[in-house]
Length: 129
Length: 208
Image (tube, rainbow over all chains, first blue to last red):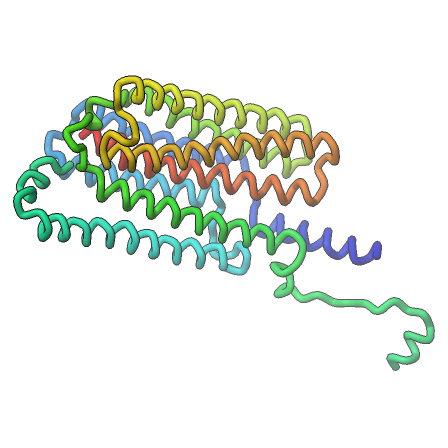
């Protein structure tokens, strides 16, 4: 019984070491990068830096994607080694489902709007972001 | 051979290979919790998709430009980002076995989480007092559903931190509590990732 406890403790320890090695440097670097990637898009909007809305929106989304990746690697510690790679596999798979769900919904509903409400289609595009 | 050792009263010895690790002890829990977080991400994906579809359905009601104070959103974003750092500092303290430091950073993280929820609730109260209620337009329904689902997650994160403080007080830093704290840390950082989507797509793109 005692031996079994010892074995399970050892595995806990190995797992702990293997999948999450926290360093102050890693967290501070992640925090600094995330802060910069947050401040720039807020500055773009609050300061009305870019007049072209499409360019501004694309830039802001690009900063968001970059910051999500920073959080993923610096804070959530996703890497190819953790849990024999299953953490990364689940993450990438979820990313694909996320893009299909959000992209697919926007694409289909936009077409439905155009087809179902001919009178409102001009109105809708005028009010687009 | 086998009979000999049994007869001699020798305890059977089991050798576990590395492949068995995740199915045992904390490994399975951590991977399972990660899968839960990914399924939670899909819930948020559907809420973001709904918000995206309804993002221009104002029904003649208030629009993002009239509703939001971006400085307040910026403040809340900073609060949540700093709480991610303090959560990380708590994990480092746990790794080093410093119980006092771990408790301190957990409390700071919880206070930051409560600040975030408090500011968000006051923002909601302000909006509702101006007539921007969830039933006013499709846009506002989607807004309140998405943002308050995130806020609810943060609230439960704070409750979880409180539970962990009690458990740390009762049992100290043993294996079970370490595993729970690792899950808590993942949960908290995951909420910060969702918030990146919220402040980008709801607030910043809405204000453009």
